[in-house]
Image 1 (cartoon, helix red, strand yellow):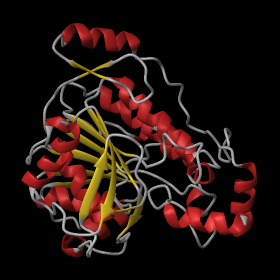
Image 2: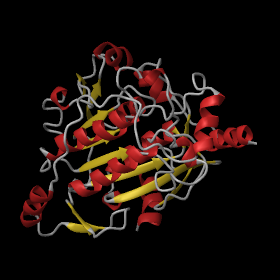
Image 3: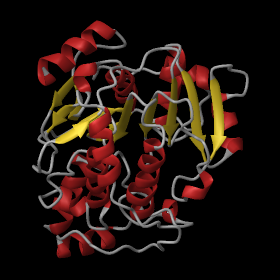
Length: 343
């Protein structure tokens, strides 16, 4: 019975397609299911984990400087948070993309370039970045950094108007956890570092888009409690809340289990031609209450379109692909979709 339930859970959802099916045995799943509680510890080293200082002083200073900033209710139900109203990120602006060579990040980079943005693609491997994106696009800058370690970030956000975080790892132990790359370091420490560095350029950044995961609010419920056995949803939720409290203008997108790709061996021109088949329609919600799949191609489009719309600022958007025609790359249809739900 346990095995059957687990297989159903795996079919329903994973964390941004981060369940590594081949390397993970049913024994691991059975152990996770038998515990049925999120693990609060971690299996990886915390080397490079910096102490995260409160930003209350910086926050109050900002509030005095920007008295017209609006209030947004946090997902944790705490007091409204003051966030900076910076508007939209427009073509021609510089956008920093972390996790740029991953399954979602590479499509976000390709989409941004196709719309006339300047892109700073962050990767740990210059060779991999250039192999994927080439080195002849004047609007593309491939930079080496490891968000898990602050001392590698340098001036990554200098001149940036937008930030898109697409970083992630597998929910269960796999080869991707090698070299201190488990959920805590990737989904918590690394993201906190990116947010901290973005705050140094708060006057310039118009939007920080975080690609999170469905189930972060429901992480103690089946089937998400299984996926959260090693804490991946806990760490994602911590980073969502850290971003909410930062004062940065943000949009948090929570997609379902990812489909289409990843196209990690494709070049930039091929990425731009990829389509999402017959499931191009999109369902969105402001609550963590949707189940299903999300096309990586459609998700990349959704991220770029969200940066251009003031109505998505300060929002948490759950998102799933559905059968039928969707907004495609048409800005007006995306605006209508977002406004119909977000107001």
